[in-house]
Image 1: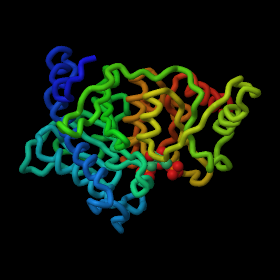
Image 2: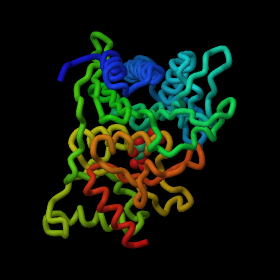
Image 3: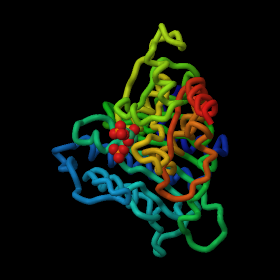
Image 4: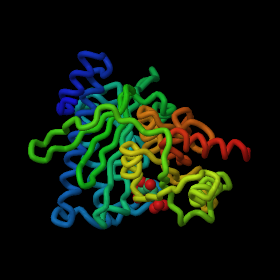
Length: 335
Ligand code: AHG
């Protein structure tokens, strides 16, 4: 594999494979540039005065960290003037952010979770940015929330950047999954994996076990069987990992396989789960499917779910295909 830059990769994809229209290329480069700025802020930590709480709440009533607010601003400022966007939506904002009239309007809609895994910021554990790109497909003038109500299978691109020991940008434009590592000396994103594939089987699961008493029967059955190890019905021992940053957990799964679950639970029966469909589940499901894995809400393919509102929540089961299919079949057996 040639160690080329993100720019060269995107230009070659556009020129040789017709895979990336020019506006989409510009958008991805702009998001990558914003992620580089966020990576620099994350690295500075206490020295950059970016740790701790911002003393504000977001639309879901969660207390925002300083980095949540900084990352949100960086992404908006970087994207608003480029001419590639019709509007943006963020997990941290009540409603969509329009492109002001003084800038040209583009055809894409950008959605993002600017800083995923906020509880890990202050303890120096991996965090990330997740993004999803849709095309504005309606003909009406202007843009409103209804333009964003498209199932995840219509995403034109999706990706994330994980800020860990290295900063890694992971991307799909619907033609497989590629990874770029930030070279801090040159400031470039360099291609380091070009055919990311998730093995169909795994012996590793990721779930917040402290919620076990609140789970539904199919999830409990699956985890009980994993915990029973070699002596149980699965006939093998399983390992567990839970980072509490979806970005970092999904990154591990794209790197070596595994299953990630944030299921519906009885604590908040009226909510479908904790994670957000548009900012977290859809982009991660697109990446995971493009790497040969699977992603469901326990019953249906995530990418087929028709969203009803911007900040909608969803149960998430994703990763190694055979394990995701097993959890999904356990749900169907009990329906
Ligand atoms: P947040 O960014 O608000 O901290 O949420 C993180 C998400 C997701 O990244 C992670 O998998 C999950 O919440 C962790 O939730 P628990 O703290 O309930 O384990």
